[in-house]
Length: 457
Ligand SMILES: Cc1ncc(COP(=O)(O)O)c(C=O)c1O
Image (tube, rainbow, N blue to C red):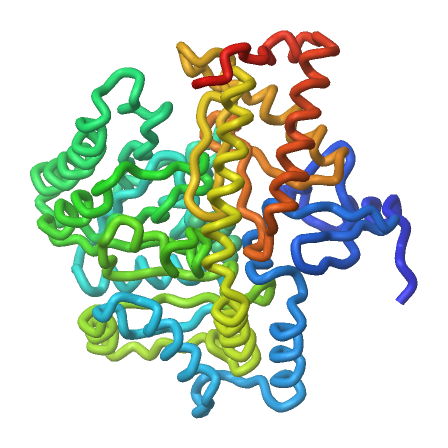
């Protein structure tokens, strides 16, 4: 098929695609025509280093994953009312990566579907309806999930907070409600978890009911690459369970070994959720997702007598692909790579922070890293302008990053797991050059970029 020019593509997109679908880099969007590993190629052959596509988990278009999909596609794709090996093997593989109690799978097609099903399971199992979610959280685009995604419902044109939804502060120890500037480090965790407990109590006292679910990402991506303090999930889960609720870990972004030390990010906090939702990296770009839960919760669902049917969930092609993704993670030792390269990336970003005052905080686990920009370190005032300027200049240098967080001042990195130390050097050198450039031009933005003389911090 002959390729359209970029302008033609833009024109057709403007004409036929809903305007609420947004593009990265609206002023000068990128037209990507192919990708491999951690690299994406535009229509002119420019090669971008991809630091943001956590979906292309084992590398864009990994040959083993592509082949698994193609081969199964030639043989059969149908629904899971027929017996098939791929779905049962996929479930077995997933369960083997989870704590023992999490031993039952349901297959769906997207992270949103997974979270919607998780909520349904939680409602059926607990008989309750009130959900605790975090400020700044995003859990998907279905109506049920927009309701629990403060990231969306709180926007000026959003649907607002529903009466069954309760917001707890994001456990951000740098610039959250309780932070290391205003509170003793050892108190922060309790302050955040106490908020969750008091929500549970308020729901009981005011409505006379228990909690349905607490849902959170195990590391918070849309909320600005937040790493909850140690023991946060343990204490929250205890409170929620004491008030009748179940705990849902949304691992749609952060699962499948991204944190380096474990398959699942909730394992960093040594907890066992009641329901885990997984998606994005599971299909390396193919739509496949799942809910993994306990036998008891699955049994409550069965007892309703209502069949769970999903036309595409768990089809042989999707499961062949998911199985190949898990094979590649193991065969190519990608968790170890995430650990080593992630630590190197974090160290090198800390070096930058030690040199440039615009960076207030650097944090992360494995290949999940955030760089937070502030106008000054004392006040920790967010600096979205610098974050977005750097993002734009990096794109011009053919490096793809993204900006997020409640104040749009956090640069996120969550590259394919094949990211290398050499890639880290490229990113850090390019960032350094942009900082230098900003300093030299002494533009209105550049005046904020102060190189720190004392490099010992
Ligand atoms: C944390 C989290 N949960 C759920 C979803 C929804 O997944 P999907 O877009 O596959 O429906 C997303 C998507 O960005 C997400 O970031």
